[in-house]
Image (cartoon, rainbow, N blue to C red; front, side):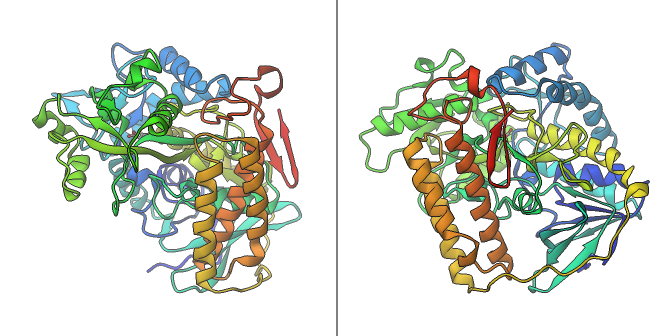
Length: 521
Ligand code: SIN
């Protein structure tokens, strides 16, 4: 296995869509080292099913994609970021196609699916429901053609190296627990999300908020952490993972039914099953609360749809559900919402620049404000592509500007054993699910904030990979709860029972955390 070198020109932390796209942009400017925490095939991108949204069909317009994104964001999107996303998206996708991405087609024309809160069918998909996997395959193949890009797997970045206020590298820990440092002219955090903060999540095990935690520890500004998106439909079965059941299923006409087998979404929103995700997730929570079942679930019903079409359009979902004895063409699928995506992250401008010189962020790890309070379905792969490319372009200029320093070892923090880290992670996941999930209250958030503080870094072993993950999750949990407690209103994915309405006067703003302060601007 390739170990990370001691020095590179550009360091890219994360090998999902944002990291790989940035690396390709950087490859003509110098040596690029891309670090993957596990295999390249283990990222949130890899698990993205539904697709990638772009106004590319004859019936669509960039202005409509813009409006749908703004509407889903519930008043909080950074309109400039949205313009960049929807405006540059089509070109980035054309480029992906040139690089060999095989999107599904009807004959020779691209096939477009529908998802929640979109006014047009504009979701490109690949191999039915493996869109993220196909995009990573094509980007990785393209990256491998460049001799200046090295991809190092199983290199987990733990700390940013900083001197004189400038980020100049990172500390790493490999699979065997050996530590190492790498110095670079500029560092990109493209390390994905933090779904593992919650007991139920669609995210893989690697999604432990590493980017946001590293950036915060280094002194960067963090934004919009209170906005966690819960995907309405994750498989809910004992002894089965919370496998994502793509929103594209509802785009094809699937219904949601409650324990009495009644379709309930029409009574919550005019778009019924295709309402924005936050609306559907809250409606499901309400139906679960009023259900008389012991361990309540609601159901996704596809039984009225054409069986052969479902098998062809959703081969991965069909075969995965069969493993659990569910035939999606004939059986109702038990589901509940699960943590899916973080709208917040490391605060950046439109070129990925964070508030720390030398540090950039892109994709789910970043917060440009593009998603506002609730991300529109299938805008996240697009975000990774568009803002990954932009960050790569901006980083090229750092090569001349930086005054690179040798990497240093960071001081070790107190050691505890691995079991303590596991125990801390489980407790954090339970607390967050209970009090910082789909429905929140000031009292619950306060309780969780206090307990999270007690769990604190001192209880966690930061000298093993799992210890670092525990510490990152503890920090990410503190950031989410602090922002959620401070936002005394409900908006998008952040719902407070003690403040159920919007408060545009005080809170139609982004939360920003740096050190001990939380402000809204
Ligand atoms: C899905 O397929 O439902 C997930 C797509 C997304 O999160 O945008």
